[in-house]
Length: 187
Image (cartoon, rainbow, N blue to C red; front, side, top):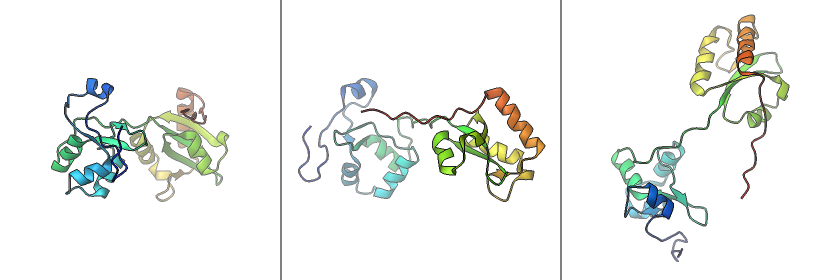
């Protein structure tokens, strides 16, 4: 692919064979963020970053240099307030975990990567009492369910019989927590 001598970004029009077969956008442009900012002067760099961060704009593919490529029509549609034709990526499945903290309280939290979260909390793996599949909605539901024993606005709860019974029921239903590091993706 030729590179633009002024910007050091990919300067080509069209689609890869895979995207051409899957897309109903013949003639649409795949552009880098820098190219989109030049082609659409009303677009602000921070707006593009926010759309990407929130999942409203997902990259179609990457240049050999690792830069994300976006459909120009999707960026234009977002600027007009329309929903882009590409569907956003689905969030990774996660778990709601119940962990006994050093102070004896039970922490109810959500994570998509339990191994990394437990390391960040600096607790032993056997301190994780139970996990149940679910997302932030389930975490919020559990916080409301045990709100009477909650410590302030934290995710920590008193270890009372009601909560310990719920943790035991979750462990019985879903088995003991499985805490394994995510495998490294080989190139």
